[in-house]
Image (cartoon, rainbow, N blue to C red):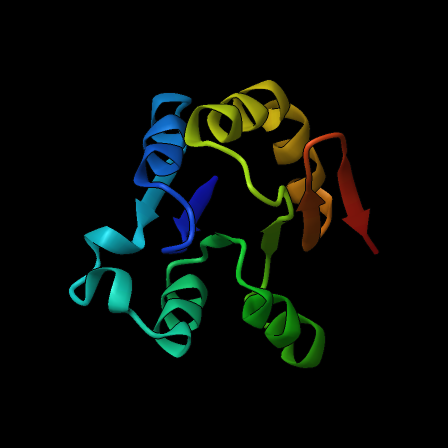
Length: 117
C-alpha cells in the first residue's frame, strides 16, 4: 500500500511502514517539508493514490465533505509517545491494511480500529 504521513505524526511511522514493505512518504520528504499545506497533501494523495495517515481533524472534515483524500486513517490516540505509536501500528498493521482494502475511512486509537462505513 502507498501512504502519506502528515506532519503531526513522526517520520519514524513512515520508516516503519517502509520496513514492512509499503511505499510511504512523510511530509518532511516533500519540498515544503512540514509546512506543506493540506491542499497539496490532498493533491499528492490523489495523484499518487496514497492513503493519508493523520491526526489532523481538517483531513477528516475534508473526507466527510468532499471524499478527499480518497482513503484516510485518522489517528485518535491523544497524547502518546512515539514508541507507543509505532508499537500500536506494528501490532495492528496487518488488520489495518485488510480494512483499507475494502474501506476508505479508518480510525485507530489505543484500544481499537474503527471502520467507518
